[in-house]
Amino acid sequence: MVVLEDGAVHLYEMNSGQETHSFNLKNGGRVLFSPSGKSLVGITDNQDLIVWDTSTGKKLGSLSGLDWVHGVTFTPQEDVLAVIDGAGLLQLWDLAAWKRLASLGGYGENAHPLQFSPGGRLLAGGSEDGYIYLWGAP
Image (cartoon, rainbow, N blue to C red; front, side):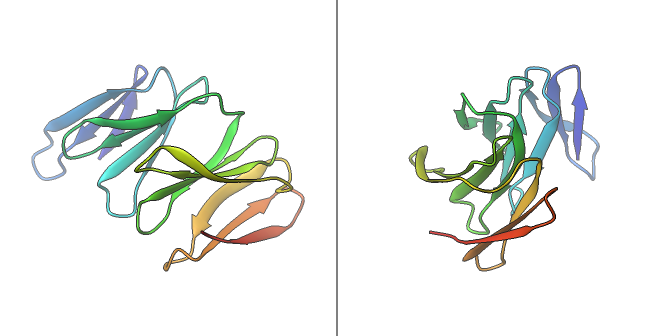
């Protein structure tokens, strides 16, 4: 279970109710688990992304300098993070090397959350312009 409180993310073990880890989110307010639950990404108030290992509490990496983050999602394999910003720029990040794999524009403003297909070969997202966007994933 995740609780956001006072700029921190608190993880609790469901059966015992014991807190297992606490992460500083710098007054941010959005988090997302990876498909397996092994990683957690948090979005800070200044739009940095921080990824943590949920079993050890270790910070795995971070991304900064992003425009307003509208959506973020992991591939099913949990090796790539997709991020869409307020300007409609889609970025794909390799989580092992923390390198940008691709940067694609033209998504539209006011983007909605992203989702990879179960096999990770397609990435879909919607926008307030009424369109659904699909991309082939690397």
